[in-house]
Length: 227
Length: 214
Image (tube, rainbow over all chains, first blue to last red; front, side):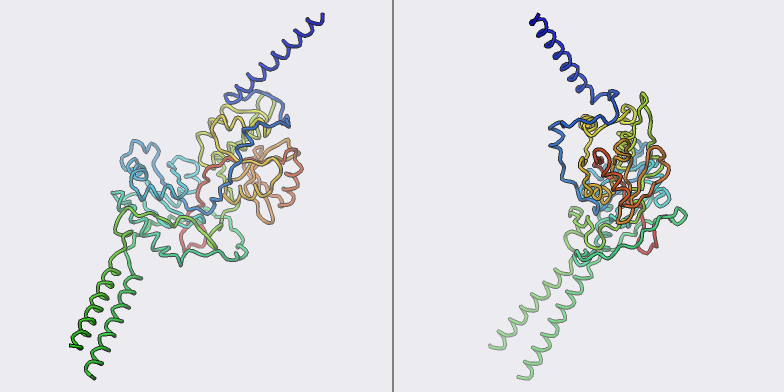
């Protein structure tokens, strides 16, 4: 009789264990019905290991590429997307910003960008605040990747030409009361006009040096003639 | 002879200055070539954290998933997750998730499913308010338990004074509570659970310098 009980308990244990394992293996495929919020204190070890260093990336800039639905079969759109893979500076921009690719049937595009970016394809670089740093769309897009990269770089340099324009941390004043954007206030964001390459700072330095040289020359001549 | 040496020295100085001037006047290497690297890609100081939208996680209505039932159970956890997946740019994953997941979930049952699907996520199971602040600060939002742990909704705004929620039972509107009301509600729920996918929320609506508001 004792052996019968032992065998019965062993069989029951094996059945329960096997059932549990099968349920676990199926969990990723399809969720089984179960009681809502059935709490278990034991937590899988591999979950605890997935503690992430939470990314503090709220201040990172955004690069958005807006393309037509079915862009893979549209030459201009497809080429534009490819440039961000192959052109080194564009690839660098993509890697160092939050990258978005929206098509014109994407709900996010329809809700947030359709009115301000109506012409596609379009490239938009934004600060984390939403401020547009660079925008080019449709026929205004350069026809080659190099000029596009240079236009973006030049525009960024113009709007943020050096370290002095990158704010240093300081006490943050109380932020103004946020205002809910009203749809009828939105206007089309014009494409950015690529700036002519400017070296104002360098020219000023060059002029200063030339002035010093001129002054030195005059002084020398004056000194020589007086001797 | 002495004057001649001084003149030679003076001319050398002039030549040096001229060369220096000319070199400085040349365009920088970065602006001449197309291969320089961009470095100004993150806002700091006063320009950082200037979120202009309210709620911060301003999920388009069409992206807000409504709760659905399965075998008599609600799917509030899945609906909240689907909403944030869509917001964070994973619409296809969200649709797939909604098509094959339903019913109630717990922190223990949901995590393996996210892992199996290869989705990155972050969560707290101990009521860490800092987690919520991070989720809103980075504009990702978070799924949070309420009603004693029987329901889950999306936290889409949290500032010093108030909290905004999208309830999947009526996702058309944002429900506003005071910050303390919400935190009390969340902290008193059974697991004090909050979870969010870790992907990229969209940029804020575009605007240009000089615009009064977007």
